[in-house]
Length: 126
Image 1 (tube, rainbow, N blue to C red):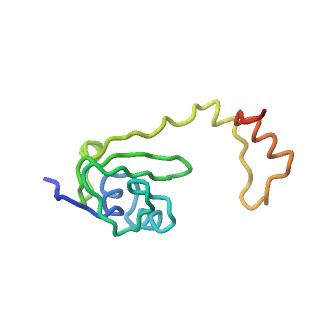
Image 2 (cartoon, rainbow, N blue to C red):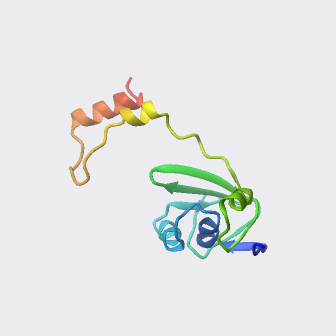
């Protein structure tokens, strides 16, 4: 049986429903500003309630979930998906993801030519 309450800490809840691999990573994401509760940046100890909207940035992808059941103990994947409603946009298709330019870490700022190519691939050119 899972432990159910009226509220839960945002770092514990995101870890319990398997949005983050560890609670430490969830707390680190909160401190870095990658977690927002109802549009406001969340500290790790902020309480979440049923109906709150949580926006997360995980691995460059935005996840938008609504809290259905505030829990603080980690549960299995089948139970975890019942504790939130996912409103996230679909991930980019493989073709789009493969065509995105990947820069080496530490390669510096993109040149003007690189920026133009990125804009063209993203479809933002005029």
